[in-house]
Amino acid sequence: MSLPNDQRSDSHASDLDTIVLGGGCFWCTEGVFLRVKGVRAVESGYCNGHVIAPTYEQVCTGESGHVEVVRVTFDTREIQLSQILEVFFSVHDATTLNQQGNDVGPQYRSGVYLTRSEQLPIVTAFIADLASREQALRGRITTEVVPLHNYSTAESFHQQYYDRFPQAGYCDYVIAPKIAKFITAHPDLVA
Image (cartoon, rainbow, N blue to C red; front, side):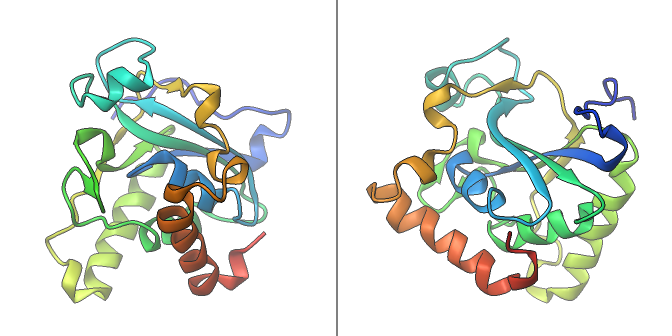
């Protein structure tokens, strides 16, 4: 598997790693990961489509091929990729193809987008283990695991959406329960 050059950033690159995750609406996934211990940055964006630098409107049509994602940069001295994956798979439904709740379309598909080839065996082993632990998931996980390509940052309006608009209907009814689920399931990983 060939991947673009290592996409880690920061002066402490040896301690930082980055993974890109698609778990439905990026507002939800971002809201959770902003609260995870060891996470240094979370950015909403779009990836793995065919349009260069798409707009939100283009992605929402489902025709650009992109998925709404969050780019999660984390400190490996505090949290491991397997723990990031544990959080990710506990707050979204990896068994529904192109859908999370009422959000429907290919832009809401479940995906793990690799920034380094060394991540592949960790991710595939995690998913295999998850499927073996959760009988209901066996053979039903629809999460795509592929290299990251054509990533672009979402518009500034989408960044830290939940933290800016916690009283908005979508935040209150969809995002807040996901954050609460994370806090209940993983109290040791709450920042």
